[in-house]
Image (tube, rainbow, N blue to C red; front, side, top):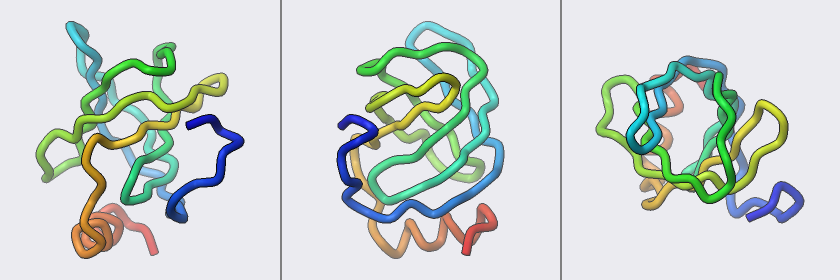
Length: 99
């Protein structure tokens, strides 16, 4: 998915810290900028490439497997391998301080 393509679901703006890990790399704290059942936007402290595999850790949850869908300077769009169920998504948004 490129940044110009329409999104499948509306993203909820969030500003909280989560962790990412790339294959054979350390965990990095990142800012989670927005969140949807299918993916999210993060601001990682390292450069990543479209197509890269990542593991996202939201506090209190199991690791979420994702792929880098797009990059734009220091913003990265992740697409989750398995979308969130709507009820789980709403619960996570509330826990992270979203509307």
